[in-house]
Length: 411
Ligand code: 17E
Ligand code: FE2
Image (cartoon, rainbow, N blue to C red; front, side, top):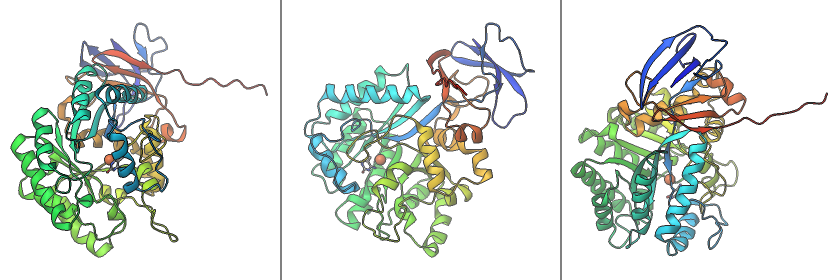
């Protein structure tokens, strides 16, 4: 298969991309072709590697209102409502809902996904279901499973054992939730425990860290320091870190030095955080997001995720990561010219680095033949037009094709 008239980010002119089975065989500059022949015609639009979903909870997806709605809109009520739904979770129920959500992701050009699966359940029913989904959907996505202790590692009965069992069963990533543990000390010891577990097992780390407006929540420094001394930074991710929006500049100026030394990754879920945070404020009201632009300017790796699709924490969502990108750029004051030129980094290359995809990702000869044809010729124009992935190619074959809406004008 070949794609012609492809525009590539950061390169002049148009290109032909040749796929040999499941690999990219050649990328060659070529003037515009009026007739695409037997090639797929990108028509001068961008061709990029697949979108990445670096942070989602597929085990909780499509459960909003079951059995009750989150009426306060807080993270903590979300956790309570989920605990009620979790009691009803079955193997088949989890698989059915996760498969529906994966279809939504696929339809928006996502081929790499990291999902947090709640392991604070003595039966580990959701985890066992998601391990099967990971294998059954390999033709659609590459799925990383995080062992995520929603109700705590130290604060939940048997939390440590459940985490270790989840990793032994085949989870890819060790999670955590230090700001939810009952005490500061438990938060700290949970991080030491999970970093030990990751080091022993060779797993990656992705911690829900400081997902609160409480400026006293300061577990990020603990996670970053653990990553630094163990030299594991690139394999470690801090998700949410919304308290950073409430920490003062003096603290952040010291903290950023450590963050840079540690080289850990960051995920922000802007639609989720603007909805869940700021809930204890009247006015002025905090935005409740981490310092995305500032992390980025400091040279740290930061990307955007969806977090939820219709669950106890967030009632909306349709799988479209570009919706998250658009909202995030607004909320984080990143609609300046320079940010618009490279906005897709936040849902492609930066996220791939967070997931440590390495040579399994990217438009380069020899790498997997996974790519998207988009509906616009630049990052800026894709955002402005609220464009889409029109074609998603995986393992050298067309996985998804979207026909844009057609508008008829009568005057
Ligand atoms: N659980 C959690 O602790 N935080 C979230 N944002 C979601 C689940 C969606
Ligand atoms: Fe999350």
